[in-house]
Image (tube, rainbow, N blue to C red; front, side, top):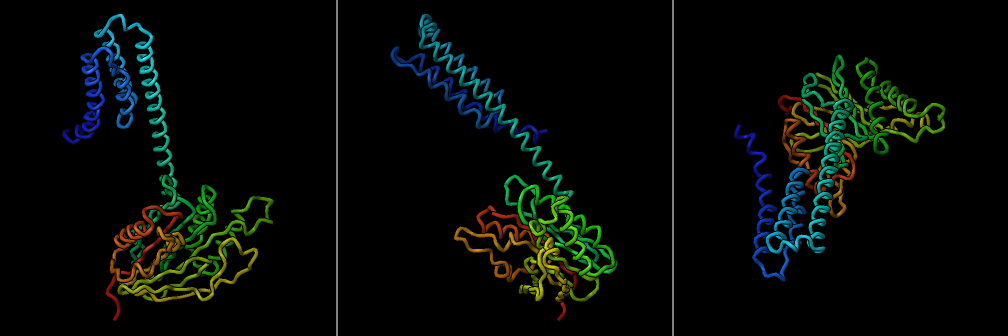
Length: 367
């Protein structure tokens, strides 16, 4: 019970400030010489109350200020109570108090609307981008999403993981554009990936299917001539449960990084494909790249919101330089450190959405 009562105390303690101000002005004005009038200073009491109080608190303080102004007139000179000057001061206090109460009501209504928007945004993120399972077969994984918009929880960056009979398939991507259109495009691609990734088809067939899904699902009916206006950069990887190289198809997306014994290596695609959604224009052939992923390694997949994040001088975030020497073997611990380091680099605010997946294969590193 003591914890529940501890919360409101600071707010009610602050209410004593405007009340003490009203009492002080009242006492000084009553005993001041007749030619000194401090009544107009009473307006300061309701004026500061909205900084910590709601409509009822503001209304109460405003009513006390009006009462104090009335009593000052009665005590100092009853005839002065009905003078034009004193009536004008009382009316001004009433108008200021009423305006502040209305302001607080509107502010609280906006705050409730913002809370509801945040709730809907978080629900949409859970549907479109559910948290990655901590375990993907023998692998351990974690995902991080940092939205550029302060009130947003989701944007055009995307990621997903699907288990197959022999391993895990991951996708990470970035939709061209922003706003709800980008969220819708990301949801369509993720739906196509989750439907097709568990099949036994190879990576080229999977990526071809995803490209066609982008081409046909993201273009309005009758607008076939607009192919290429919507595209998504993406990297799709297939990680075997047993030892063996990671297989990858890169579609215009930043390359993965493998961190081994604190030393990062960028896995550049030798023959990258164009972004998804441009297949009708480029007719690409998807080439599978491969790279080693041993026990103890950390595999990083990320979007360009990471590497293009700028500090106050305009310098990009040097991903491989910053993570050199990091030896966190737990994906959650690694991404927690990474989030703090990235936000420190940009001064706390990103200009573009950023997403990252960290995957580890537990076990002793091979020597």
